[in-house]
Amino acid sequence: MNKEKDIQKQFYKIYKGLINVAEFEEWLYNTPEIEDVYGDVFYFNLLDLNYRNRHIKNYLEKVIETKIPFGEFEQMRIVSLLEKIIYEVDDLVEVLEQIYDDYCRGYSFLRYLGLNYVTELKTSLN
Image (cartoon, rainbow, N blue to C red):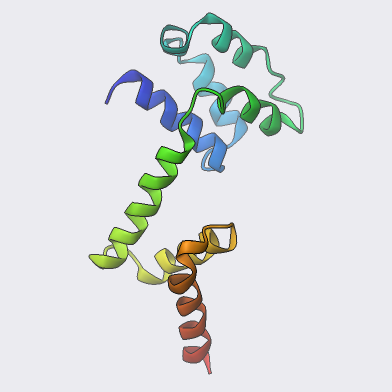
């Protein structure tokens, strides 16, 4: 992996809530390569944020969304979920729960998988 992709993955993790703000802040201070990849203005904008502010995620998203291809990462994540279903990798129930959650968050193309999961779960509980 190259530095830029590694940095983008970390930004994606904070954006999606996969890591907390404290973990992100620690990573930020230990990753001076961000300045090399994105320039000093972007890096200093990140360093200048108050990570103790209760609305920090909103401020942080505004700074990073101009540089990070979130759509590309979301596409990889969704494709990975669908491949897990096809190849029956991992716990199918957990994967389908994630598919359903994504459907509820606006990924309407996952409707049939998400709703079939809920329907089957309801039927199996009765």
